[in-house]
Amino acid sequence: MEKDEKIKRFRKEISYIKDFNLKADATYLVSVLPDYFFEVDASSTGKYHPKYAAGNMGLARHVKAAVKMAVELLSNPIIGRPYSERDKDLIIIALLIHDGLKYGKVKTDKYTKFDHPLLISNYIKEVRDHLKMSDEDIAKICSMVESHMGPWNVSSYSNVVLPIPKAPMEKFVHMCDYLASRRFINLEFDDNNDIIDESKNNEN
Image 1: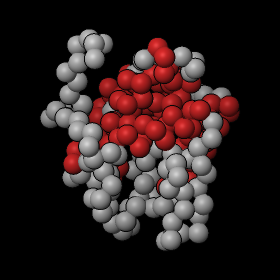
Image 2: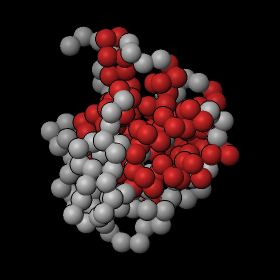
Image 3: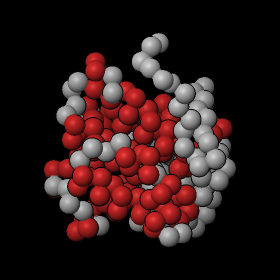
Image 4: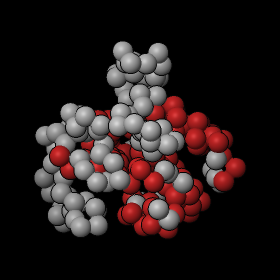
């Protein structure tokens, strides 16, 4: 898949990022994700995600949902107050790529990699020279993606122990990923795999 096509599929999510340089970094990171990311289900078993995350581009739709959760929550003046505008941008970037290597750099079998949070963190560090963000920004994003699995940080199929989210931004990213995986939350997507947002105001 061409890089331009990958970027096009996440143009809406990238547009939420305010800082020009961080937006460029997010664009680059999306462009170098493996082709399979834009094709596969969010869950290899189908047990742990809602229906919209199944089928072609299911994983990408899950990521879109997680980003949408973050944008909605951060726009709330009570919930978003603790976070600077840069923090908000970094949260969105972390969610954009948190499952970017869910099946590894190359998809070799049908099962997801338990250590995928560490794989994507290491990948960010590998491409660090292509990014404009600071080392501090890199560290924050890596800590968020590494800990996004929350309490599900061990597996009988792996010796890896993933970090538990501790800092507020880490907990926030885990929360958005968690909400995007809940089967009782139903989101609708249009033909371009963009979330259909029918809200026109802030009334409950």
